[in-house]
Length: 265
Image (cartoon, rainbow, N blue to C red; front, side, top):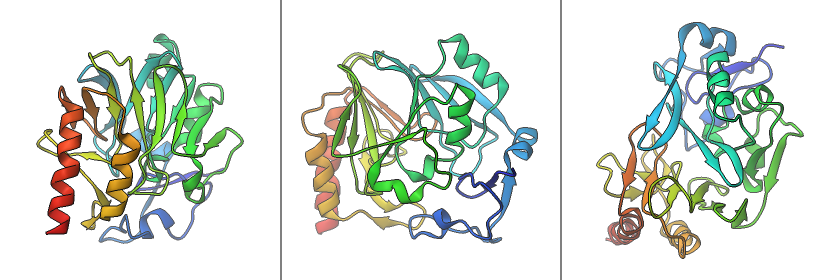
């Protein structure tokens, strides 16, 4: 079976469709050259996986960059070894590197733009479960019994790890709170709702990042309410070196105020 991958968003499909609904959605875009596709096999010949430290956590990303160019993070937690976010490419070298660190127990993904080749990652580690929020079920392109949908505003995986529905960007947009992260004070792994800004001093909130559509004030207030009560010093963004190390809780709180005052002006 040919598994096509959209070259703009990195989503994997079970065949070769004529269009990518993920990119046709108002939060994404179809490239100037129109819809283009690759395959996992072709991607293996043109790209490799970069595996290295990203501010104290092990990051994994494509080299050269591909599609949205997110990186995943490997989290050795009391809930098991978690792959936070996912990538379009799986390589034998990356699988071996993670197996040497204890393998994977589950995959958790923040939102549909990063679903990518999640089933191939799961299969590479013995069909480990993939945790997605129920509110974004419609965006799954390759349904599987290995995908587990959770509901509500939070899902506690252990004493130290909780998935939180941040919402806003997608109804089921998710962040991961890790109380026992390697840095002191805990960490928030934020995906892109909220998204760490380029200056790494604050975060922002967008319905569509490439199309510059801001998130509604109601959605931002809802996110602020759901994140209240979680302590963290570090905030890890969606891609390499897009992190706030130290003072993360204060930066996020200040960013809520900054955004809401600006959008109301």
